[in-house]
Image 1 (tube, protein in one colour):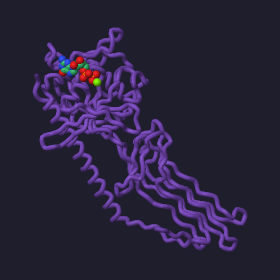
Image 2 (spheres, helix red, strand yellow; image 1 turned 60 degrees about the horizontal axis):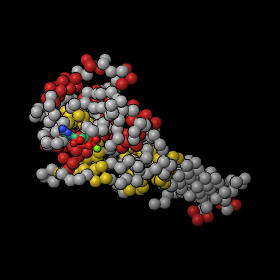
Image 3 (cartoon, protein in one colour; image 1 turned 135 degrees about the horizontal axis):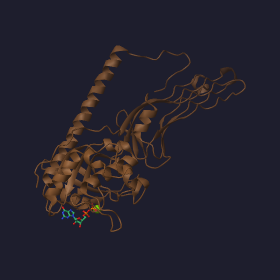
Image 4 (cartoon, protein in one colour; image 1 turned 90 degrees about the horizontal axis):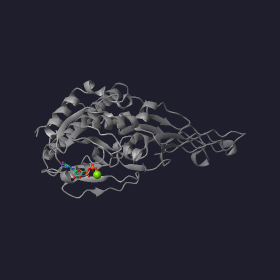
Length: 382
Ligand SMILES: Nc1nc2c(ncn2[C@@H]2O[C@H](COP(=O)(O)OP(=O)(O)O)[C@@H](O)[C@H]2O)c(=O)[nH]1
Ligand SMILES: [Mg+2]
């Protein structure tokens, strides 16, 4: 058995699982002191869960990441009670938690059309406010995709995902219960000798055609988003769903899995991924493994063997490929170490990027300190 994992590539993805946005409720409208008229309330800002929305789409659609609701109408002789300002809606994916700048949870979106009020509009001018309107609430919020686990297992049936999960987690995996999902992922925890823990989710039911909602299709694929990294698991002897379906080699399995991810959501492919090649205890496994490595390192030489519509635009870039046997336990320790290393490296990279951004923000705020011009007509409440 090959002892060490082979490094193919070393690149961390840029899957977006959190977004920071600026929100501001609309200002109230002016009151009408002489006639006792009341200005309209400013519009509110809401975060609303929408099907098929992703944080990346949100970022692409609103690069400024500013959401400001409309102002309330002033009170006039013809309309003493001013109308309410227009609300502003931030479209977000399902399965999001919304927090404020201090990390305090404002709310969660667990199903389609769930909505959370994040910044309230100011009151219109009225007797109580001396007919002066109030400003809307200003708030910076974070939208975070709720994670189910650090690592998600990706593989066709019988690859050995369940066996692997019990082997690495030393305990019977538990079935997790999440409000935002009907597919219950099996969760296991890898324990390290220094008490570090890494959670692994097995989301069963991925088959060819899952992107078209075959098998558990979308329900399954949706949850691959909710892990920091992917662990592909393939059977070195290949895969055949049933006697009626085509036999696939391990390499073909990797390509087909990649294509399923791509067809569902291309961004999934940017997640850091490892490849565990299972059942290395079987006869001929060693030869097949060398063949597989050759194919993975030169995919272009082998892709012409596939149907055109099965070839992914981009092949998966695995951080490591690790031969294992979930039955004998061979390679499992190496796999655990690579999983940990990969997650640590990703965390370091994210941390570096975060610090760089903070530094940049600091520089910008030092060079151009900006304050809003004072207004005679608007007062603030704290
Ligand atoms: N020879 C061998 N069989 C394995 C290994 N891992 C799993 N299996 C067998 O493969 C079959 C499918 O395993 P399972 O863990 O249920 O796969 P899953 O469908 O991906 O969860 C079972 O019969 C396992 O005993 C392995 O490393 N070597
Ligand atoms: Mg299973």
